[in-house]
Amino acid sequence: MIYFDQVSKIYNGTGKTVALEDVSFAVEPGEFISIVGHSGAGKTTLLKMLLAEEDPTSGTVFFESVNIHGLRDSEKPMLRRRIGTVFQDFKLLPHKTAYENVAFAMEVAGRTEDEIAADVPHVLDLVDLGSKMFNFPGQLSGGERQRVAIARAIVNQPDLIIADEPTGNLDPVNTYEIVQILRKINDMGTTVFLTTHNKGIIDSVKKRVITLDQGRIVRDDKEGGYTL
Amino acid sequence: MFFLNVKRIWKSGFVSFWRNGVVSLSAVLVMVVALFMIGSTILLSAVLEDSLTTLKEKVDINVYFAQDATDEEIQGFIKGLEALPEVSAVEYITRDQALMDFKERHANDQLTLQALDEVGDNPLLAYINVKADDPAQYQGIYTQIESPGALSPIERDIIYKVNYEEERNQRAIERLSLAIAGFQKVGFAIVIIFILTAALITYNTIRLTIYVSREEIAVMRLVGAENNYIRGPFIAEGVFYGIVGGILTIALFYPLTVWVEQGTSSFWGGLNLFDYYLSNFFQITVIVLLSGIVLGATASYMAVRKYLSI
Image (cartoon, rainbow over all chains, first blue to last red; front, top):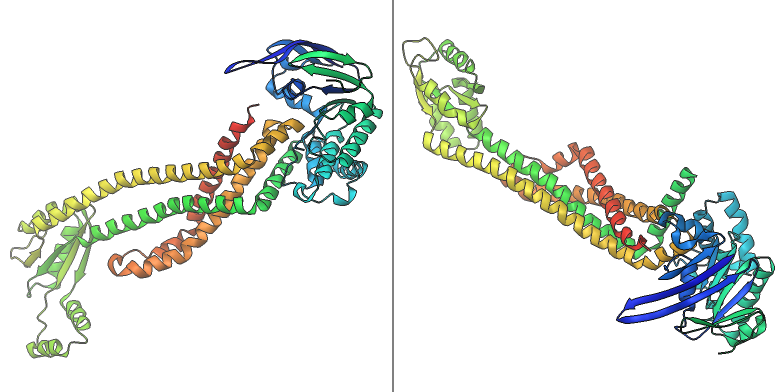
Protein backbone atom coordinates (compact mmCIF):
# COMPACT_ATOMS: atom_id res chain seq x y z
CA MET A 1 0.00 0.00 0.00
CA ILE A 2 2.81 2.37 0.92
CA TYR A 3 6.26 1.98 -0.45
CA PHE A 4 9.31 4.10 0.37
CA ASP A 5 12.02 3.42 -2.21
CA GLN A 6 15.52 4.58 -1.26
CA VAL A 7 14.24 7.88 0.02
CA SER A 8 16.68 10.56 1.17
CA LYS A 9 15.94 14.07 2.36
CA ILE A 10 18.68 16.63 2.79
CA TYR A 11 17.93 20.14 4.03
CA ASN A 12 20.31 22.74 2.66
CA GLY A 13 20.48 25.35 5.35
CA THR A 14 23.61 26.40 7.16
CA GLY A 15 25.47 23.23 6.34
CA LYS A 16 23.71 20.11 5.15
CA THR A 17 21.26 18.40 7.45
CA VAL A 18 20.41 14.85 6.58
CA ALA A 19 16.85 14.13 7.72
CA LEU A 20 16.43 10.79 5.96
CA GLU A 21 19.02 8.63 4.30
CA ASP A 22 18.29 5.76 1.94
CA VAL A 23 15.06 4.72 3.63
CA SER A 24 13.20 1.80 2.06
CA PHE A 25 10.24 -0.11 3.45
CA ALA A 26 6.77 -1.26 2.47
CA VAL A 27 3.50 -1.15 4.40
CA GLU A 28 0.71 -3.65 3.74
CA PRO A 29 -2.98 -2.65 3.92
CA GLY A 30 -4.36 -3.06 7.42
CA GLU A 31 -0.99 -2.88 9.16
CA PHE A 32 -0.43 -0.98 12.41
CA ILE A 33 3.05 0.40 12.09
CA SER A 34 4.91 2.42 14.69
CA ILE A 35 7.90 4.60 13.95
CA VAL A 36 10.15 5.32 16.91
CA GLY A 37 13.31 7.28 17.31
CA HIS A 38 14.86 10.24 19.08
CA SER A 39 13.83 13.78 18.23
CA GLY A 40 15.37 14.67 14.90
CA ALA A 41 15.57 11.05 13.78
CA GLY A 42 13.37 11.85 10.77
CA LYS A 43 9.96 10.57 11.91
CA THR A 44 8.03 13.73 11.08
CA THR A 45 9.82 14.17 7.76
CA LEU A 46 8.69 10.69 6.83
CA LEU A 47 5.05 11.54 7.54
CA LYS A 48 5.25 14.87 5.73
CA MET A 49 6.34 13.02 2.62
CA LEU A 50 3.29 10.80 2.80
CA LEU A 51 1.12 13.94 2.87
CA ALA A 52 3.03 15.51 -0.03
CA GLU A 53 4.09 18.37 2.21
CA GLU A 54 7.76 17.66 1.57
CA ASP A 55 9.52 16.33 -1.51
CA PRO A 56 12.33 13.79 -1.17
CA THR A 57 15.78 14.86 -2.31
CA SER A 58 16.09 11.47 -3.98
CA GLY A 59 14.03 8.29 -4.15
CA THR A 60 10.27 7.88 -4.51
CA VAL A 61 7.27 7.38 -2.24
CA PHE A 62 4.31 5.42 -3.54
CA PHE A 63 0.78 5.44 -2.16
CA GLU A 64 -0.81 2.45 -3.80
CA SER A 65 0.59 2.77 -7.33
CA VAL A 66 0.75 6.56 -7.30
CA ASN A 67 4.07 8.36 -7.03
CA ILE A 68 3.15 10.98 -4.43
CA HIS A 69 5.72 13.48 -5.57
CA GLY A 70 4.69 13.27 -9.18
CA LEU A 71 1.34 14.76 -8.23
CA ARG A 72 0.44 18.24 -9.37
CA ASP A 73 -0.54 20.79 -6.71
CA SER A 74 -4.17 20.51 -7.76
CA GLU A 75 -4.09 16.72 -7.22
CA LYS A 76 -2.65 16.82 -3.70
CA PRO A 77 -5.98 17.57 -1.97
CA MET A 78 -7.38 14.30 -3.41
CA LEU A 79 -4.49 12.36 -1.85
CA ARG A 80 -4.92 14.10 1.51
CA ARG A 81 -8.61 13.24 1.63
CA ARG A 82 -7.66 9.54 1.56
CA ILE A 83 -5.40 9.99 4.58
CA GLY A 84 -6.67 10.91 8.03
CA THR A 85 -4.21 12.85 10.15
CA VAL A 86 -3.83 13.25 13.92
CA PHE A 87 -1.16 15.52 15.40
CA GLN A 88 0.40 16.16 18.78
CA ASP A 89 -0.99 19.73 18.76
CA PHE A 90 -4.43 18.54 17.51
CA LYS A 91 -4.60 21.11 14.68
CA LEU A 92 -8.30 21.80 15.13
CA LEU A 93 -9.95 24.91 13.70
CA PRO A 94 -10.36 27.07 16.82
CA HIS A 95 -13.40 28.99 15.62
CA LYS A 96 -15.37 25.90 14.73
CA THR A 97 -17.19 23.61 17.16
CA ALA A 98 -16.25 19.95 17.50
CA TYR A 99 -19.16 19.16 15.18
CA GLU A 100 -18.07 21.74 12.62
CA ASN A 101 -14.45 20.58 12.71
CA VAL A 102 -15.50 17.07 11.79
CA ALA A 103 -18.08 18.33 9.29
CA PHE A 104 -15.41 20.46 7.62
CA ALA A 105 -13.46 17.36 6.57
CA MET A 106 -16.64 15.98 5.01
CA GLU A 107 -17.51 19.26 3.27
CA VAL A 108 -14.05 19.35 1.80
CA ALA A 109 -14.55 15.87 0.42
CA GLY A 110 -17.75 17.03 -1.26
CA ARG A 111 -20.22 15.11 0.89
CA THR A 112 -23.86 16.19 1.05
CA GLU A 113 -25.56 17.88 4.01
CA ASP A 114 -27.56 14.71 4.69
CA GLU A 115 -24.46 12.55 4.89
CA ILE A 116 -22.82 15.09 7.19
CA ALA A 117 -25.84 15.27 9.47
CA ALA A 118 -25.86 11.48 9.72
CA ASP A 119 -22.13 10.71 10.03
CA VAL A 120 -20.75 13.46 12.25
CA PRO A 121 -22.76 12.68 15.41
CA HIS A 122 -22.11 8.99 14.84
CA VAL A 123 -18.34 9.45 14.65
CA LEU A 124 -18.29 11.79 17.65
CA ASP A 125 -20.21 9.14 19.59
CA LEU A 126 -17.56 6.61 18.62
CA VAL A 127 -14.89 8.71 20.32
CA ASP A 128 -17.26 9.32 23.24
CA LEU A 129 -17.82 13.03 22.60
CA GLY A 130 -21.50 12.91 21.73
CA SER A 131 -22.35 15.23 24.60
CA LYS A 132 -19.73 17.88 23.73
CA MET A 133 -20.47 18.12 20.05
CA PHE A 134 -21.13 21.85 20.10
CA ASN A 135 -18.20 22.88 22.28
CA PHE A 136 -15.35 24.85 20.77
CA PRO A 137 -11.83 23.38 21.03
CA GLY A 138 -11.01 25.94 23.71
CA GLN A 139 -13.75 24.46 25.89
CA LEU A 140 -12.38 20.90 25.63
CA SER A 141 -9.57 19.15 27.50
CA GLY A 142 -6.46 17.92 25.67
CA GLY A 143 -7.74 14.34 25.52
CA GLU A 144 -11.11 15.51 24.21
CA ARG A 145 -9.50 17.67 21.56
CA GLN A 146 -7.42 14.75 20.40
CA ARG A 147 -10.55 12.64 20.16
CA VAL A 148 -12.17 15.33 18.00
CA ALA A 149 -9.06 15.18 15.80
CA ILE A 150 -9.40 11.40 15.55
CA ALA A 151 -13.10 11.71 14.71
CA ARG A 152 -12.17 14.15 11.96
CA ALA A 153 -9.46 11.80 10.70
CA ILE A 154 -11.77 8.78 10.41
CA VAL A 155 -15.01 10.42 9.29
CA ASN A 156 -14.23 10.07 5.59
CA GLN A 157 -13.26 6.41 6.08
CA PRO A 158 -9.70 6.91 4.87
CA ASP A 159 -7.42 4.10 3.78
CA LEU A 160 -4.69 5.35 6.07
CA ILE A 161 -4.49 7.15 9.40
CA ILE A 162 -1.30 9.05 10.19
CA ALA A 163 -0.81 9.84 13.88
CA ASP A 164 2.20 12.02 14.63
CA GLU A 165 2.96 11.84 18.38
CA PRO A 166 -0.80 11.88 19.10
CA THR A 167 -0.28 11.37 22.83
CA GLY A 168 2.62 13.77 23.28
CA ASN A 169 0.50 16.32 25.14
CA LEU A 170 -1.71 13.90 27.06
CA ASP A 171 -1.73 12.31 30.52
CA PRO A 172 -1.44 8.50 30.87
CA VAL A 173 -5.19 7.88 31.07
CA ASN A 174 -5.94 9.87 27.93
CA THR A 175 -2.91 8.33 26.22
CA TYR A 176 -4.28 4.87 26.90
CA GLU A 177 -7.71 5.83 25.56
CA ILE A 178 -6.32 7.35 22.37
CA VAL A 179 -4.24 4.26 21.71
CA GLN A 180 -7.29 2.07 22.29
CA ILE A 181 -9.22 4.11 19.73
CA LEU A 182 -6.39 3.81 17.21
CA ARG A 183 -6.29 0.04 17.73
CA LYS A 184 -10.02 -0.17 17.24
CA ILE A 185 -9.72 1.76 13.98
CA ASN A 186 -6.97 -0.61 12.90
CA ASP A 187 -9.09 -3.62 13.81
CA MET A 188 -11.76 -2.28 11.44
CA GLY A 189 -9.24 -2.54 8.61
CA THR A 190 -7.67 0.93 8.37
CA THR A 191 -3.90 1.13 8.10
CA VAL A 192 -2.42 3.11 11.00
CA PHE A 193 0.91 4.89 10.83
CA LEU A 194 2.01 6.04 14.28
CA THR A 195 5.06 7.91 15.48
CA THR A 196 5.77 8.12 19.18
CA HIS A 197 8.32 8.49 21.96
CA ASN A 198 6.15 6.57 24.38
CA LYS A 199 7.66 3.22 25.32
CA GLY A 200 4.47 2.11 27.05
CA ILE A 201 2.43 2.48 23.88
CA ILE A 202 4.83 0.48 21.74
CA ASP A 203 5.15 -2.30 24.27
CA SER A 204 1.40 -2.60 24.71
CA VAL A 205 0.46 -2.47 21.03
CA LYS A 206 2.76 -5.35 20.04
CA LYS A 207 2.75 -4.55 16.34
CA ARG A 208 5.42 -3.78 13.77
CA VAL A 209 8.02 -1.22 14.89
CA ILE A 210 10.49 0.64 12.69
CA THR A 211 13.30 2.35 14.56
CA LEU A 212 14.95 5.39 13.01
CA ASP A 213 18.27 6.83 14.05
CA GLN A 214 19.79 9.87 12.39
CA GLY A 215 17.68 9.39 9.30
CA ARG A 216 18.41 5.68 8.83
CA ILE A 217 16.32 2.61 9.59
CA VAL A 218 18.21 0.70 12.26
CA ARG A 219 15.54 -1.90 13.14
CA ASP A 220 12.34 -3.20 11.59
CA ASP A 221 10.67 -5.72 13.92
CA LYS A 222 7.45 -7.54 12.98
CA GLU A 223 6.24 -7.59 16.59
CA GLY A 224 8.67 -5.35 18.31
CA GLY A 225 9.04 -3.52 21.57
CA TYR A 226 10.63 -0.19 22.22
CA THR A 227 14.39 -0.44 21.96
CA LEU A 228 16.63 2.55 21.44
CA MET B 1 -21.93 20.44 -6.04
CA PHE B 2 -20.96 23.91 -7.21
CA PHE B 3 -23.95 25.56 -5.53
CA LEU B 4 -23.47 23.50 -2.40
CA ASN B 5 -19.87 24.72 -2.19
CA VAL B 6 -20.89 28.32 -2.84
CA LYS B 7 -23.47 28.08 -0.10
CA ARG B 8 -20.97 26.53 2.32
CA ILE B 9 -18.33 29.15 1.51
CA TRP B 10 -20.72 32.06 2.21
CA LYS B 11 -22.05 30.47 5.33
CA SER B 12 -18.58 29.70 6.62
CA GLY B 13 -17.42 33.25 5.80
CA PHE B 14 -20.35 34.73 7.67
CA VAL B 15 -19.91 32.46 10.68
CA SER B 16 -16.25 33.32 11.00
CA PHE B 17 -17.03 37.04 10.50
CA TRP B 18 -19.52 36.77 13.35
CA ARG B 19 -17.38 34.70 15.71
CA ASN B 20 -14.14 36.65 15.24
CA GLY B 21 -15.90 39.62 16.82
CA VAL B 22 -12.97 41.86 17.72
CA VAL B 23 -10.94 41.11 14.62
CA SER B 24 -13.97 41.71 12.40
CA LEU B 25 -14.78 44.93 14.23
CA SER B 26 -11.30 46.33 13.68
CA ALA B 27 -11.34 45.34 10.02
CA VAL B 28 -14.76 46.96 9.61
CA LEU B 29 -13.57 50.17 11.30
CA VAL B 30 -10.55 50.38 9.01
CA MET B 31 -12.88 49.76 6.10
CA VAL B 32 -15.03 52.66 7.31
CA VAL B 33 -11.99 54.94 7.30
CA ALA B 34 -11.10 53.84 3.78
CA LEU B 35 -14.62 54.20 2.45
CA PHE B 36 -14.99 57.50 4.25
CA MET B 37 -12.08 58.79 2.20
CA ILE B 38 -13.76 57.69 -1.00
CA GLY B 39 -17.13 59.13 0.04
CA SER B 40 -15.59 62.43 1.13
CA THR B 41 -13.87 62.68 -2.21
CA ILE B 42 -17.24 62.43 -3.93
CA LEU B 43 -18.81 65.05 -1.68
CA LEU B 44 -15.77 67.33 -1.82
CA SER B 45 -15.71 67.32 -5.59
CA ALA B 46 -19.44 68.12 -5.61
CA VAL B 47 -18.84 71.08 -3.30
CA LEU B 48 -15.92 72.39 -5.35
CA GLU B 49 -17.69 71.98 -8.65
CA ASP B 50 -20.72 73.74 -7.27
CA SER B 51 -18.64 76.62 -5.92
CA LEU B 52 -17.10 77.04 -9.36
CA THR B 53 -20.52 77.18 -11.01
CA THR B 54 -21.71 79.67 -8.43
CA LEU B 55 -18.66 81.82 -9.01
CA LYS B 56 -19.12 81.62 -12.76
CA GLU B 57 -22.71 82.70 -12.42
CA LYS B 58 -21.71 85.73 -10.42
CA VAL B 59 -19.87 87.21 -13.38
CA ASP B 60 -22.21 89.20 -15.66
CA ILE B 61 -22.63 92.49 -17.50
CA ASN B 62 -25.15 95.04 -16.28
CA VAL B 63 -26.53 97.50 -18.79
CA TYR B 64 -28.42 100.50 -17.31
CA PHE B 65 -30.76 102.32 -19.65
CA ALA B 66 -31.39 106.05 -19.83
CA GLN B 67 -34.43 107.21 -17.89
CA ASP B 68 -36.27 108.18 -21.06
CA ALA B 69 -35.64 104.91 -22.90
CA THR B 70 -38.98 103.34 -23.82
CA ASP B 71 -39.87 99.77 -23.13
CA GLU B 72 -39.95 99.00 -26.86
CA GLU B 73 -36.49 100.38 -27.36
CA ILE B 74 -35.19 98.22 -24.52
CA GLN B 75 -37.00 95.10 -25.78
CA GLY B 76 -35.48 95.69 -29.21
CA PHE B 77 -32.06 95.95 -27.63
CA ILE B 78 -32.60 92.70 -25.69
CA LYS B 79 -33.70 90.90 -28.85
CA GLY B 80 -30.52 92.00 -30.51
CA LEU B 81 -28.48 90.70 -27.56
CA GLU B 82 -30.28 87.38 -27.43
CA ALA B 83 -29.49 86.84 -31.06
CA LEU B 84 -25.81 86.68 -30.17
CA PRO B 85 -24.78 83.02 -29.91
CA GLU B 86 -22.47 83.55 -26.91
CA VAL B 87 -25.20 85.11 -24.74
CA SER B 88 -26.88 82.51 -22.55
CA ALA B 89 -29.44 84.61 -20.69
CA VAL B 90 -30.70 88.16 -20.44
CA GLU B 91 -32.66 89.24 -17.39
CA TYR B 92 -34.71 92.44 -17.76
CA ILE B 93 -35.56 94.51 -14.69
CA THR B 94 -37.96 97.36 -15.47
CA ARG B 95 -37.93 100.64 -13.59
CA ASP B 96 -41.01 99.62 -11.62
CA GLN B 97 -39.46 96.28 -10.76
CA ALA B 98 -36.26 98.03 -9.72
CA LEU B 99 -38.26 100.32 -7.44
CA MET B 100 -40.05 97.39 -5.84
CA ASP B 101 -36.78 95.56 -5.31
CA PHE B 102 -35.32 98.68 -3.77
CA LYS B 103 -38.25 99.12 -1.39
CA GLU B 104 -38.08 95.50 -0.39
CA ARG B 105 -34.38 95.73 0.28
CA HIS B 106 -34.85 98.76 2.47
CA ALA B 107 -38.09 97.69 4.16
CA ASN B 108 -36.50 98.27 7.57
CA ASP B 109 -34.85 101.53 6.66
CA GLN B 110 -37.53 104.23 7.07
CA LEU B 111 -35.10 107.04 6.39
CA THR B 112 -34.22 105.83 2.94
CA LEU B 113 -37.84 105.10 2.13
CA GLN B 114 -38.81 108.62 3.21
CA ALA B 115 -36.06 110.08 1.04
CA LEU B 116 -37.43 108.07 -1.87
CA ASP B 117 -40.90 109.50 -1.25
CA GLU B 118 -39.41 113.00 -1.20
CA VAL B 119 -38.03 112.47 -4.69
CA GLY B 120 -41.55 111.66 -5.81
CA ASP B 121 -40.86 110.24 -9.26
CA ASN B 122 -39.16 106.85 -9.60
CA PRO B 123 -35.48 107.73 -9.71
CA LEU B 124 -34.30 104.25 -10.59
CA LEU B 125 -33.18 103.05 -14.00
CA ALA B 126 -34.24 99.97 -15.89
CA TYR B 127 -31.38 97.52 -16.41
CA ILE B 128 -30.53 94.10 -17.77
CA ASN B 129 -28.17 91.37 -16.57
CA VAL B 130 -26.39 89.63 -19.41
CA LYS B 131 -24.86 86.20 -18.90
CA ALA B 132 -22.54 84.34 -21.22
CA ASP B 133 -22.06 80.59 -21.70
CA ASP B 134 -18.36 80.88 -21.07
CA PRO B 135 -16.66 83.53 -18.91
CA ALA B 136 -14.14 84.14 -21.69
CA GLN B 137 -16.89 85.50 -23.96
CA TYR B 138 -17.82 88.52 -21.86
CA GLN B 139 -15.24 90.71 -23.53
CA GLY B 140 -16.79 90.11 -26.94
CA ILE B 141 -20.31 90.79 -25.68
CA TYR B 142 -19.12 93.98 -24.02
CA THR B 143 -17.64 95.24 -27.26
CA GLN B 144 -20.91 94.54 -29.06
CA ILE B 145 -22.94 96.45 -26.46
CA GLU B 146 -20.57 99.41 -26.55
CA SER B 147 -20.49 99.84 -30.34
CA PRO B 148 -23.44 102.10 -31.24
CA GLY B 149 -26.07 100.65 -33.53
CA ALA B 150 -24.63 97.19 -33.48
CA LEU B 151 -27.52 95.63 -31.56
CA SER B 152 -30.50 97.84 -32.33
CA PRO B 153 -31.06 100.06 -35.31
CA ILE B 154 -31.76 103.14 -33.24
CA GLU B 155 -30.21 106.52 -33.85
CA ARG B 156 -30.09 107.74 -30.32
CA ASP B 157 -28.16 106.14 -27.47
CA ILE B 158 -30.51 104.59 -24.89
CA ILE B 159 -27.69 103.20 -22.77
CA TYR B 160 -26.90 105.13 -19.65
CA LYS B 161 -24.08 103.03 -18.31
CA VAL B 162 -22.52 99.61 -18.88
CA ASN B 163 -21.24 97.96 -15.75
CA TYR B 164 -18.38 95.77 -16.83
CA GLU B 165 -15.02 96.41 -15.31
CA GLU B 166 -12.91 94.84 -17.89
CA GLU B 167 -9.68 94.39 -16.01
CA ARG B 168 -11.19 93.18 -12.75
CA ASN B 169 -13.52 90.76 -14.44
CA GLN B 170 -10.87 89.50 -16.74
CA ARG B 171 -8.60 88.76 -13.81
CA ALA B 172 -11.41 87.02 -11.95
CA ILE B 173 -12.22 85.00 -15.02
CA GLU B 174 -8.64 84.01 -15.57
CA ARG B 175 -8.28 82.93 -11.99
CA LEU B 176 -11.49 81.02 -12.23
CA SER B 177 -10.36 79.16 -15.33
CA LEU B 178 -7.06 78.36 -13.64
CA ALA B 179 -8.90 77.14 -10.57
CA ILE B 180 -11.11 74.89 -12.65
CA ALA B 181 -8.17 73.37 -14.50
CA GLY B 182 -6.16 73.12 -11.28
CA PHE B 183 -8.99 71.45 -9.44
CA GLN B 184 -9.44 68.95 -12.19
CA LYS B 185 -5.76 68.02 -12.03
CA VAL B 186 -5.29 68.16 -8.26
CA GLY B 187 -8.69 66.65 -7.61
CA PHE B 188 -7.87 63.68 -9.79
CA ALA B 189 -4.52 63.21 -8.04
CA ILE B 190 -6.21 63.46 -4.64
CA VAL B 191 -8.79 60.89 -5.62
CA ILE B 192 -6.08 58.50 -6.79
CA ILE B 193 -4.01 59.01 -3.63
CA PHE B 194 -7.06 58.60 -1.39
CA ILE B 195 -8.13 55.42 -3.07
CA LEU B 196 -4.62 53.96 -3.05
CA THR B 197 -4.22 54.80 0.64
CA ALA B 198 -7.59 53.30 1.41
CA ALA B 199 -6.71 50.13 -0.51
CA LEU B 200 -3.34 49.77 1.24
CA ILE B 201 -4.76 50.27 4.73
CA THR B 202 -7.50 47.75 4.06
CA TYR B 203 -5.09 45.27 2.54
CA ASN B 204 -2.78 45.46 5.54
CA THR B 205 -5.57 45.03 8.06
CA ILE B 206 -7.07 42.09 6.26
CA ARG B 207 -3.62 40.60 5.87
CA LEU B 208 -3.25 40.76 9.63
CA THR B 209 -6.59 39.07 10.19
CA ILE B 210 -5.57 36.32 7.81
CA TYR B 211 -2.12 36.06 9.37
CA VAL B 212 -3.94 35.14 12.58
CA SER B 213 -5.60 32.33 10.61
CA ARG B 214 -2.49 30.99 8.90
CA GLU B 215 -2.45 27.85 11.03
CA GLU B 216 -6.09 27.24 10.22
CA ILE B 217 -5.22 27.49 6.56
CA ALA B 218 -2.49 24.88 7.05
CA VAL B 219 -5.00 22.61 8.82
CA MET B 220 -7.53 23.01 6.02
CA ARG B 221 -4.89 21.99 3.52
CA LEU B 222 -4.00 18.92 5.57
CA VAL B 223 -7.62 17.85 5.68
CA GLY B 224 -7.56 17.95 1.89
CA ALA B 225 -9.36 21.21 1.12
CA GLU B 226 -8.78 22.63 -2.34
CA ASN B 227 -7.32 26.12 -2.57
CA ASN B 228 -10.55 27.68 -3.78
CA TYR B 229 -12.45 26.13 -0.93
CA ILE B 230 -9.96 27.58 1.58
CA ARG B 231 -9.84 30.97 -0.09
CA GLY B 232 -13.61 31.29 -0.52
CA PRO B 233 -14.65 31.95 3.08
CA PHE B 234 -11.89 34.53 3.51
CA ILE B 235 -13.06 36.39 0.43
CA ALA B 236 -16.65 36.17 1.68
CA GLU B 237 -15.45 37.61 4.99
CA GLY B 238 -13.75 40.45 3.12
CA VAL B 239 -17.02 41.12 1.29
CA PHE B 240 -18.83 41.28 4.65
CA TYR B 241 -16.24 43.77 5.93
CA GLY B 242 -17.01 45.84 2.84
CA ILE B 243 -20.79 45.65 3.21
CA VAL B 244 -20.90 46.42 6.92
CA GLY B 245 -18.21 49.11 6.56
CA GLY B 246 -20.10 50.61 3.63
CA ILE B 247 -23.41 50.76 5.51
CA LEU B 248 -21.70 52.38 8.51
CA THR B 249 -19.98 54.92 6.26
CA ILE B 250 -23.23 55.87 4.53
CA ALA B 251 -24.92 56.23 7.90
CA LEU B 252 -22.03 58.37 9.12
CA PHE B 253 -22.45 60.81 6.24
CA TYR B 254 -26.01 61.60 7.32
CA PRO B 255 -25.23 63.57 10.48
CA LEU B 256 -21.93 64.71 9.02
CA THR B 257 -23.43 66.46 6.00
CA VAL B 258 -25.97 68.18 8.24
CA TRP B 259 -23.18 69.34 10.52
CA VAL B 260 -20.87 70.49 7.75
CA GLU B 261 -23.70 72.37 6.13
CA GLN B 262 -24.66 74.17 9.31
CA GLY B 263 -21.08 75.19 9.87
CA THR B 264 -20.33 76.39 6.36
CA SER B 265 -23.55 77.50 4.70
CA SER B 266 -22.72 81.15 5.43
CA PHE B 267 -19.74 81.24 3.13
CA TRP B 268 -20.74 78.61 0.61
CA GLY B 269 -24.30 79.65 0.27
CA GLY B 270 -24.75 77.83 -2.99
CA LEU B 271 -24.68 74.08 -2.45
CA ASN B 272 -26.83 72.41 0.13
CA LEU B 273 -24.55 69.50 1.03
CA PHE B 274 -27.22 67.59 2.90
CA ASP B 275 -29.67 67.92 0.01
CA TYR B 276 -26.94 66.84 -2.34
CA TYR B 277 -26.31 63.78 -0.15
CA LEU B 278 -30.01 62.93 -0.02
CA SER B 279 -30.71 63.46 -3.71
CA ASN B 280 -27.65 61.41 -4.72
CA PHE B 281 -28.14 58.88 -1.93
CA PHE B 282 -28.55 55.96 -4.29
CA GLN B 283 -25.44 56.68 -6.36
CA ILE B 284 -23.31 57.42 -3.30
CA THR B 285 -24.50 54.22 -1.63
CA VAL B 286 -23.76 52.13 -4.69
CA ILE B 287 -20.29 53.62 -5.12
CA VAL B 288 -19.35 53.28 -1.44
CA LEU B 289 -20.74 49.74 -1.12
CA LEU B 290 -19.16 48.53 -4.34
CA SER B 291 -15.82 50.06 -3.38
CA GLY B 292 -16.04 48.29 -0.02
CA ILE B 293 -16.90 44.94 -1.56
CA VAL B 294 -14.18 45.17 -4.21
CA LEU B 295 -11.61 46.36 -1.67
CA GLY B 296 -12.46 43.64 0.85
CA ALA B 297 -12.58 40.82 -1.67
CA THR B 298 -9.37 41.82 -3.47
CA ALA B 299 -7.46 42.37 -0.23
CA SER B 300 -8.57 38.97 1.10
CA TYR B 301 -7.73 37.25 -2.15
CA MET B 302 -4.23 38.68 -2.21
CA ALA B 303 -3.59 38.18 1.49
CA VAL B 304 -4.64 34.53 1.55
CA ARG B 305 -2.66 33.70 -1.57
CA LYS B 306 0.51 33.88 0.46
CA TYR B 307 -0.50 31.00 2.71
CA LEU B 308 -1.72 28.69 -0.02
CA SER B 309 1.63 27.71 -1.47
CA ILE B 310 2.54 24.47 0.37
